Picture 1 (cartoon, rainbow, N blue to C red):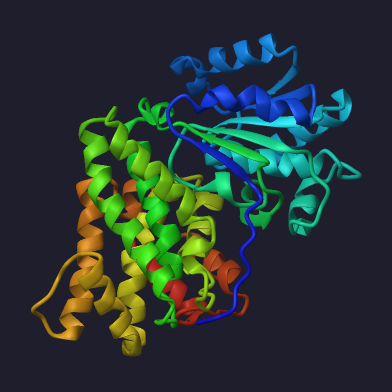
Picture 2 (picture 1 turned 180 degrees about the vertical axis):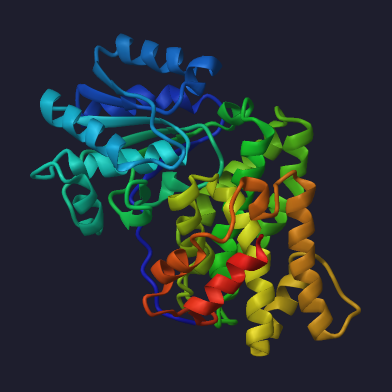
Length: 387
C-alpha cells in the first residue's frame, strides 16, 4: 500500500432541498457574483429562476457568463475572466454540470491572471494560483468536479484538450432532483464517465489497498445497478441519488488512495478525440475502455489476476479459467455500455483514422507510462480497434 495525502477542502450539501443553503454559502464570500451556466437547460428546468430569486432576495449584484460548452473552451474562460476583472467580481456561482464547473475553476484563476493569454494560463496552472471562491450548484452526475480541483479545458484551434488543477469549490450543492430532467443519453454518458474515473485507478499494480478496492468495486456495482433504473424511470430519487454520490466520490481521489498511479490512459486518449472531434466525453471513454483492456491483456498477460478480480467482484462471473474469465469481464463491460444505449464505435460518431497518428503522438511523447506502458504504435492500434 502506497503513501497518500487526503485534502478535500470543499463543503458539500447533498440531498433534497439543499439549494436552501445557497445564500448562506455565498454571503461570507462576497456580494458581487458571476453566475456561470451552459446552454440554457437550467432555464428550461426552472432552476435558473430559482437561483435568481435567491440572489435577488439576498441583495447580490449578479453578472452572467452563459453558453459554456460541454467541452469548455478557452474562449469561455477569457469571457468570464475579463468580466470578473471589469466588474470586480468577488465570488463565482457555477450552476450546471461538470463542464460549467470546470470552466468556472479556470475563470476563478483567470480573474487574477496578469494578461489575456488564457491558454498559457491553463498550461501554467497547478492548484497553487490565487483564485476567486466558487459555489457550485450541480445538475448532472458525471464528472465529480464538485469534490476536486481539476478542470478540463479545450483549445479547438490547436486541437488540444488538457486537465489542470485550478481550485476546489468552496461549497458544492448536490440535489439529485436537479438531475431528473437529464436526457437519457446524457445520463448514460455520465454513468460511463464515473465508471471510467473508477476504472482508471482500479486497474493498478497495487492489489493490497483494501478500502480503496472496496470503494472502487462498490461504485462500479452501484452504477451498473442504478443507471438502467434511471433510464427507465428518470425521476427515481434513490437511483439518481446513488448515481450522484457515486459520481462525487469517483473523481475525488479517495478511491485511489494507497495505490500506484496509473496515468489514466483512457482519459488521455479520449481528450485527443474530443480535441479533434468535440465528442461527448463519457461516450468516448465508453468506446475506448473495453478496447484498451483487450489490448493490454494481450500485450501483458501478467495483468490477468487484476482482470479476473474485476470479472468476479464487479460482474459476479465465475466457473472459467483465468484467461477466459478476464476476457469475459471485459465483454461484460462492453455489453453494459451497449445496453444503456451508448454508441460503441468511432465510425458511429463520424470519426475515421485521419488524425490517429497525430493524436497518438500527442498522447505519448515519447511513451505513456502506467498500468501497462503504451507506445505511439500501441495507441494508434487501440484507436483503430474502436472504429
